[in-house]
Image (cartoon, rainbow, N blue to C red):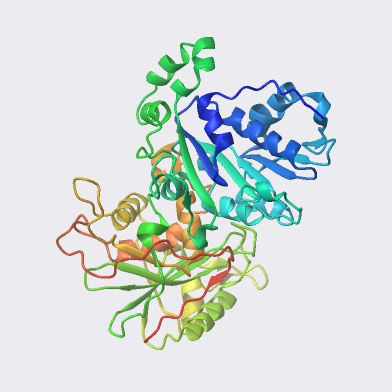
Amino acid sequence: MNIDLDYTPQPKQQELHASPANEILFGGAAGPGKSHALRFEVLKWALLIPGLQAYIFRRTLPELEKNHILPSLQQFPRSIGRYRSDKNRWHLHNGSIIFFGYCQYEKDVFNYQGAEIHILAIDELTTFSEFIYDYLRSRTRTTLDIPQRYRHKVPGIYTSSNPGGVGHAWVKHRWIDSAKEYECKRAPRDEGGMMRQYIPGKIKDNPILLERDPEYVHRLEAMPEPYRTAYLEGDWDIFLGQMFDFNTKDHVIRPIPVPETAPLYMTLDLGFARPYSVGWWWFDEDGRAYRFAELYGCLPNQPDTGIRQGDDEMAETIAEFEESLGIDRAVIRIAPPDAWSKKPDYVHGGQSPSTAATFARHGLTLQQGNPDRVQKIRQFHARLRVPRDEDKNRIGTPMLQVYDCCIDFIRTIPLLQSDPNKPEDVDKKLEDHIYDEAALMFMTRPLTWVPGTSSEGGHVPPDTATRNAKTVTANADIGAM
């Protein structure tokens, strides 16, 4: 059956369609026709392979409707099949299905737990967290008998994005920093092992847009920095939206033994309906912080949902966890001021003991930390700073290193964004519990100098460490204690 598609790709779009890679990022600047190309790439595969299951994602449902569902109804010929508005999907006559999906919240990704995705398209990739992307990528698999000539492309992932947003750092690391433009390069096995390629696009690559709306480029030029450079030039060195420049390449290491002489610290952020967070730390001779273990009181596969443990149960869990780590020496334990607040006793009347008093009964003595919101943000930024020379080459190790078993620190810190009403602070509506907990450590051991080159000894981290998507606890073998 011959189907006439009203689509003639422009040269840059054709590079996407002809790419030999199967994990592609297309974009950079605004305007090269990214979304249009993604939509027709998906349609191409759905028509080529009967029974194919393809998914097109945007972060929210309104974005999905505006940028893909409605355009598909205008652009896809009715001869291919029919659209099921009640299911948000196209059913093609050859048995293929094009699904439209979204993940506005982290937990939405688990709606696709049982999906078998043959072709995955994600529009505006940097609006997604690394966790959501890795989970969706894990759903790309096939039980179809794919023709031999297509097996290097199916399963396949096609993405587009501008710089900026919560996913800027991890997207830049995987596609922009790891290879030259247009170069096809095999991704590391711990990042999926697919054939990866970055195809840059700018507004000049879309002559149809420039012909029909010649003033669009002037509107981009009139934007304030850093948005102007990011959207007009596609400059990935411009960082938008993300509160902290945390990335696995510079800040995550595989576990190393904890020195026997290093003092140990524990930091605590309280939670009940929302997660509590506990972190364990040691410092090297340069004052560099190492987060070697964590407990995150979060329900499995339900981000930002607490496990509702009371103080006694929480203290018992912490004590048991430390025993499993082999900790047999003194630990300095830091907690926020509200750990000393007494609580109403709704059963017997009066007041119940504070968290600090309850923990003390279990042999866990807490010290009060400094929760100053302005200073702790500065300390967090200072710890994350990567020492570089004038050519932006890394010349030292950041003053924070996180063991790769601390999966919830690695997951949640990159998600944090600034408060739209108070840009110098973290948005409290986000999953900020580990941030608040870790900041207590940095306020207890503050940096009084800007990280540079004069005392940058210590451990240099390897390449990106292996992570997984489990929550609640992260186990670490801390070696000699």
